[in-house]
Length: 475
Ligand SMILES: Cc1cc2nc3c(=O)[nH]c(=O)nc-3n(C[C@H](O)[C@H](O)[C@H](O)COP(=O)(O)OP(=O)(O)OC[C@H]3O[C@@H](n4cnc5c(N)ncnc54)[C@H](O)[C@@H]3O)c2cc1C
Ligand code: SF4
Image 1 (cartoon, rainbow, N blue to C red):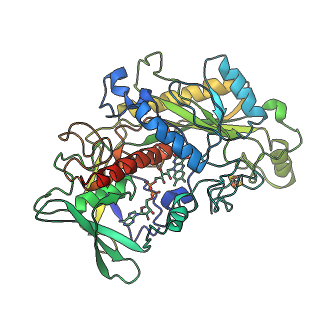
Image 2: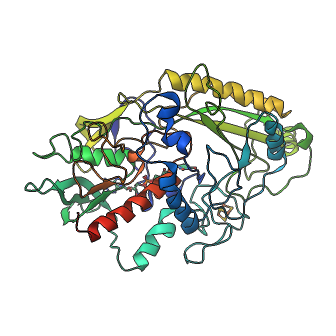
Image 3: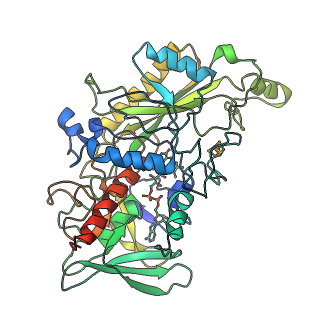
């Protein structure tokens, strides 16, 4: 998307957006993880923040539905803090990854196959997606062209269109949720055609917002009226606040010495390498920070060899790269950024986008807990590679700019108290009964797990509730 057409202001933030059909799922990394009660009831464990108004048992059936409908690869580990999915056939770990796994077992830490939102066995109910053949360069650019990897268009939107019950209107930029002044309820959506610049208004019995965490908050804030002077659904003043995500950057890269000089292997055609699960603040309490982090990593021969950034030139450089081709291994951490009221977005009073809609303004910084956690990520990364006997090439302690994780969450959090939350447990606005916000906005905290599978499980649960409420005539 063109940043000049869609500006944003305020504190530094790397805001990655995909204004297209299917949004960021067209290019996502596909790591599909569940939350557990360690995340949903984190306040009970360390006293910080708020608990979610739901438990794992409330969403588990919906995680199962998402697994079966969309397909996920992985291996069962029976970890209480990272529940298993209903996995299809997993990909294999390669040599260096197995070495790391075995070495970490001695430290009580778990390396598991990348839990990829990819179907390895095929999905009989979906004609748009094939099973993963594991033979291509599984790069994100352009996505997976046989759609073994989940993306919203082939996974959800085309099948929904086939039912005849979905009308899709692309090139439509929502700028306001309209209100019925008599009832205070949502009456529809005011949008502009991004090509013709013409304004439209569409009426609705129920408005379901899913424009991504930050755009959804922006839309709620834009929808001001006499009944909702701070934006629709914002009587609590929490819309845009409690904004959280993942901190990343620290990590390590090295070489498995026994693989140097070995023949190249076909390691490329797989949707991911490994996931090293959280180990901080589970049974013990870390003295410097709360919550946790996990590592994503991989090894083996890639289409573009890892380590090609090492200095060198000509024949000797090529030999060096070839010699080390399959021996490189690296990993980087993703850690929980605490949800804080002071981290928020609002509307910029002056700057507008191409369609004249006020831009979003960021007031967002990592805090002390995040920086202490990042220091620990670097130390443990190094310690674990050393324990595995890898030759360390570099250790990274640089924290990436806020936003880099592309896992923004929490701007309209759910809760039981309408004074401190925006949505109820079914992602329904406390203030406006016929308004739902079904994306990452509803998260109460970020945990350290990638959020997309949870976004979809919660959305499915909310849609079942919505359908039920409509049948009962409550909406
Ligand atoms: C490179 C990359 C790697 C990632 N890796 C992972 C991963 O490994 N695991 C994981 O769980 N997550 C990952 N993510 C995050 C994941 O993509 C998001 O969590 C997910 O896409 C969120 O879905 P969403 O529908 O809420 O938002 P989006 O995917 O952003 O979709 C929002 C949609 O709303 C539309 N929209 C926005 N504003 C408006 C408006 N005003 N009017 C009309 N339409 C609007 C957009 O066009 C888009 O279609 C990654 C993301 C990226 C970019
Ligand atoms: S390896 Fe990657 S790109 Fe190839 S089919 Fe599997 S998921 Fe798709």
